[in-house]
Image (cartoon, rainbow, N blue to C red):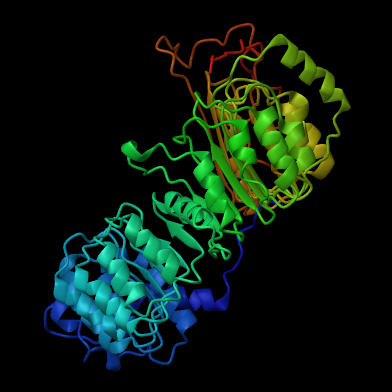
Length: 568
């Protein structure tokens, strides 16, 4: 059933109580607020004996519930057991007091976040040498002088994750970190929009043997060049790297957007542990053979592809054989490309183990009559397996290319936890009813529909059942609001309050047509009216599941929308 408001665990009640009453735990002082925050004040508080897990929960709670006083109260939690510290919401003046305090009182700190601070005095960073057990550091969008990377590389040998996007990190900084420095155990390195160049990326790859993720626009090119050089020199032992993710970032400079899929293929050859692959639309001159050149990818689990309208690429010739070779291992698939016809049956046939599927078909390409006829004939021959493990479904499809049978096939997945569908002119109440008849959406937690104008408010009868754990419902329609809609919605909200359902429900109509009639005017005769719902309170004898079941079907827009074809 939709989630019921429950009594929090005792530990959560205690954490919330402490966060709400931090003033009672702090030592009173007649000095100014900032002067009261120093190392001498902390020993008089009662947080030293708390385990690190409780301290971390207190820090998280304070950052949300007591944000205005976060700087004052976080100082009280700076004790030896504290392992996680987030100072990203503190200003420069507050950091000048908190950073030295943390350096003195938190020797066991393993995670530190200081982001969004472009102007910080250089002296502050000298305190990093005190955090010798640091494993995770996020210094993104923050001023970082050259000597900072020297200090970090000298004293923080256990560093595992470094997020330095939009910082002042350079090739020299990379050398201080992992060539001369001791930070050789880094597994995740984010260098997006830094001054690091080809040389720095090469050094990072060569001196970080455990590196799994490297975010930088030069990564693919460096890997490709390393492979080419090894082949040209006829090396018997071609270098191999432990990267598990390759991503063609969207932040590649315009003058360097000639990186092709062939470079990605060369990079894959020396990264045998790849499980995640992102291919974005700026890659030019992509052909079907380029994608097939990436094979084999035996361990691929996450695949994202986003191509431009001008890409010389087809589903049949490129993606179909690629999915046939890798689909069995895929757990997550995102496709954003020009669509010719409905290929969902192909996806379900080859990718039976998917947990997450995102289809963003914002454009269509005019296909030949022969291609359409061939596809129609093959549709009846294709096996149509249900994705039994699919938990997340995201679909954007404004061109009505997807066949109703394919949509029903996706909705039939019994493991669905999250559904988000936008601009789909194919989806109807009957399709959702057909899926509900199969599995009652008994695992569904989140349901979002946007501009699916053939669906009506009646779907709440299918969703608000005792058989699912719903927490979130968000519905919007781009058309005029039908009569009776607000009354049905109001009744459902009363039902939710009565049953103590912890469900967030939002449902709205909007119409961007300039000549909009007033709400008091009659709906046109072609629309079906929703009957008025009695305004009486729901009695105890009423059905707990369907307060609107005696209402007539809500109006909908004409289902015969014209298919828009964009020549790719």
